[in-house]
Amino acid sequence: MKRVLMAGVLIGMIMLVSLTPQVYAASNEQVIIVKGEPAGGGNLTSPQHDTELAYKELTKDRNLSAADIQYLDGNRSLPGVDAIANRTNLNKSITDAKNKCTSGGKLTIYITSHGGNDTLDIGPDTVTAAELKSWIDTYRNACPDSQVVIVIDACHSGSFIDNLNGTNTVVITSCRANQSAYGKKCYGSYFSQPFWKNISDNATLTEAFTRAYNAVSDANKKHPSRPPQTPLIEDNGDGVGHPAPLPNGGDGNRTKDLKIGENISTNSRPVIKDKTPDQSVAPGTSMNLTVTATDDKNVTRVYGRVFTPDFDFCDPDNETCEWDPPTIEFIHAGGDLWQYNYTFGTSGDYYIMLLAEDDESSCSYAEWIDITALGGVGGIVEFPQIEEPGAVTPDLSDHNYGALAGIIVGAIVGTITLISAVWYVRRRRTKAI
Image 1 (cartoon, rainbow, N blue to C red):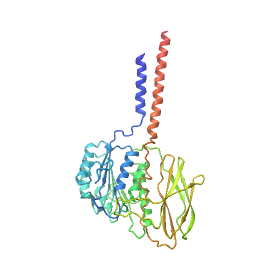
Image 2: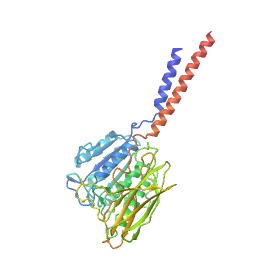
Image 3: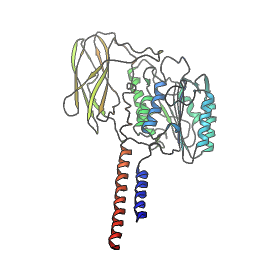
Image 4: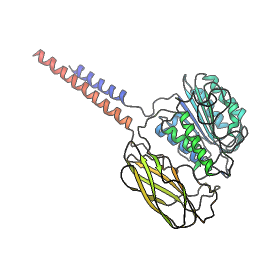
């Protein structure tokens, strides 16, 4: 009788454990993240926010642990950083991935840096496309059935496509071979920020690339006097990259179901579906700004970050600059509608970044309202096309609903098993009497 009861307990415990999702299960997927910008940097973009975002999203929402990721950066004190970014450590990281690869595995290499034609700055070193190809080839030769995903956000990154393409390989670059890649030191890259946020939201590579491409296209429209930036993807092995919309030139088909990591979040972001259109007004005009925001949960907050004509934008050479524009809180007007009455007091260009949050602290992607108070100097202002760092990547550590559901189901099944065992024991006793 005791054996039957103990068996029930054991079965219940086993089923409880087996039905509870393992947040960091053993993985055959590996990621290498490289912040390649040398000390001093350049004057357009800082990769720091981009690599930090990639690491945070992969470990928070994509079922990858720190053990699955090799993170190279010039600053060893940052969370998750494993080694200094340089040629030797990049080569070693790829070699280590080769030594750990298993059949059907995946290796993602993300590099954001300053680049030239077929060259990347990796810390104090310059790595050529030929060198990077030779290191990646060692992995592909050892693991021929593994997927290789290469994402490079750097000026002239498109020049790497015809070197790095291959079987089971995806190469994504933030621009063409003859173009520059843009962003802001205090905010991150116009391409990488939306790309990794979409990966976090369980998008496929095709979807994440397309949405990041659209974000870059929006940034191009904001700066018509600047040479455009055109992201490319190559996934069919012919060495020729193509822009969105996908499929295009044979690219985009193989990656339409391919993802980085596995989704462990059931939380979705709110969506800003409509807003006050961009327009010109007279100085001193008070306007009722409107936003329509929807979500599968309750939208609890809509707010705007206001860049006024006299706002002091970050010095692009100052990595420690603070970004703190005034915040306006929209008032819920019923249904999906939110409103705020704002007075455009002085002449010039006003840029209002809109964000919506739901009752699970998930935040939307940014939308913008651009208002020009006539009589100002006008012209192009270099301003962020992506969300405030941290504002749209909520910490879901307290919202792991998949794990909670698994625990509840496991507990119920275990309880039923125990009850069945007790019933069986009592029945045997009754028969014996």
